Image (cartoon, rainbow, N blue to C red; front, top):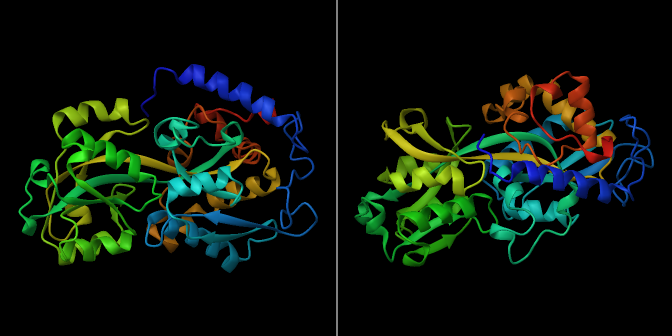
Length: 364
């Protein structure tokens, strides 16, 4: 994982900020036991007895985050693993928007990316509207990676980035976490001001390409090998070709787009019509909560998602991160604290010490 030069200083800042923010939290025990429920400041948190009722913010409909979140929530209900928490997976405008919803206490748990954590609270897409509660943001676990790439409709006469000057490009859904990285790539290759960027639901992109409303789009392979449904629709209904990344973009991407790296996707694994190599870039996605969320509930989410990981993969291979700590812990942000409940489970499971992560200030 690529680290920025200020990582160690950032880690020290987050620890100090987290300790300051923890003073008012109920039930924070120095002995790292679960202790009394911290609650979430409202009904249905489990602190008054019975299962907590939590909302899991996912992303736009048709996205991998929505698919994974819905699968997990339904698995827990179907198998009866709801003594501690019942999750309700809901559609959001995108994973970046979900992150703000966690920060604003609109959902208890939701997705974000390592890149957005790195830009928090006031850089990049947060520069004009900083997060309110970043010092209380805590990681739970990673749930997938994206191998993002750009493609063009060849019937529109597009063979290279330069052919897209003045053209419409589908970047992402409006609140998607892929948006900042995709915009950065466009800006490097042709200049964001030189194109007409479009933000739409992922499910609407195939028809937009077929109808000529956009000439190019960004898409991805989940965990590197799994195409999502709307890309499969593009693959079967649009004459497309991947847009390669220039040497300059490749050399700058890992340093300018935090915790992203250049990857080569095997087209034969994801496409029926393209068997060559495809230039891409990565994003790692994870679930996050606020520090004040009940550690008993977060412990149970961490435990169930790990212990039943193989069953989740059998249900849907998009859940490939779930049983493998090298993926769900080894790829998350090393400097943003893990939530107390998750930390306690990972220590109990004997996997915490295998990774260079930041334990919660509440456990100090």
